[in-house]
Image (cartoon, rainbow, N blue to C red; front, side, top):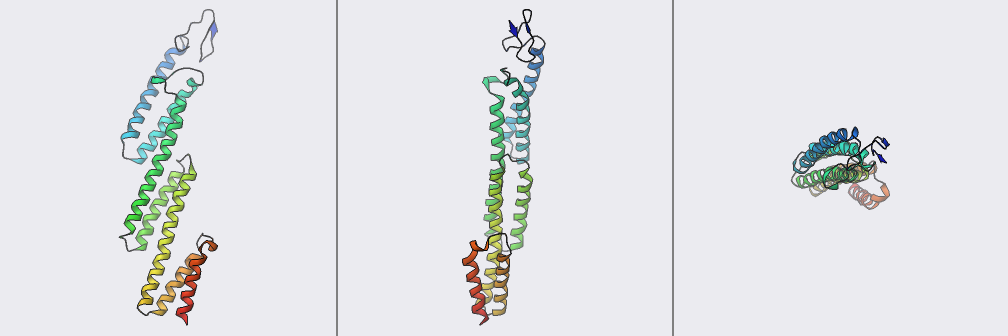
Length: 222
């Protein structure tokens, strides 16, 4: 006795096709699969060829959306896509690809920032560029499936700007010290000390740095 895999209709007078679908369900499923399959293939192409992150990410979302719609057939044992590609596999694959695209792009932008900072004298310019990356990180947090990986990028960027700010104070202090400008040197060392003591990093992890700066201030104050 035949039974339709989708609607569950069964009986002696019910006939099903090779996909296990009755006469009512077969054409509806065929049209749905054809339309969604065409969209999925188009998404695959754009994800592969586009250079725009937003386009690639949005196409990953669209692909997963249509693959999820096809998964209802997969769950009932109905074949959908060619070459026996399972919608569930596409969902898992392109969710991971989306995360990879976001993380690779943000890491590339961070590496470019590091390279530019080598020739950028202004700490304000560096901080401005870092702010742009952190803004994008926060925007992408809504998009990412594995947010822990994005937190790693965010921590790396924040540490970079933190170190740059401390080094800018210390460099200014050393220059002033070299020129014999003790008051200015002390002021810059105090700026570095204040910044480190009021950042979000545990002071115990910066104990050596704090001790060195405090010694500098003490020596110059004598």
